[in-house]
Length: 245
Image 1 (cartoon, helix red, strand yellow):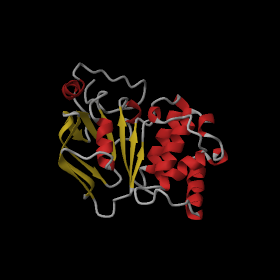
Image 2: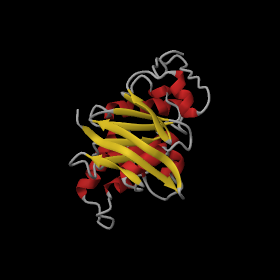
Image 3: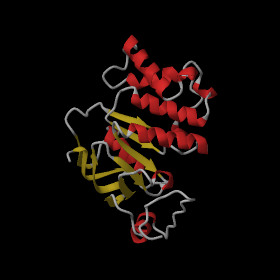
């Protein structure tokens, strides 16, 4: 199967300190890739490199022809300024902006598309509400809607279930599963357990890529990634992250 995104020998860092070293990874059509690893392991940096927000020191990122501009990015909820004076629909409309059209006005097609996505996300009735009046789960769905308004083929999500309540987390997980029927999904998370029943490929990242595959991990690999013994507690959720635990 042809890769949508092909990453080869990727190296990058900040202030001469490497964060990622010689990382190679493929993202396939309608893939569901779970990227796990400790804080500071380079997970968010990997998404920024794929998006072109930062450029690699060495190595390459090749997008399949026609994929340029068809990447949707949902940043961490904690990085979003909740006090910014903007409505939910205005926030979604910002997803229509790219590097080539910073100053253009939104057209009727943009507004119609934003309304359709807000309706699909169960947010249409809240479209005129200021984002600082929304709950954490509602804001997370607004951020996902902003990424979807550009009609991406790959959706990149950074910690999408962090800082939301259990009910909102379940809603977001169901939503990501539905979206995966239409597009590839890459999820960065420090808590892989909720995603365990649904991911297709698992990438274990801590500066180096220690594992990328479909099968369950063994505890040895997890200890290399996290630098200490790891025990995953499923709390009754069927999961396959570790082959024997």
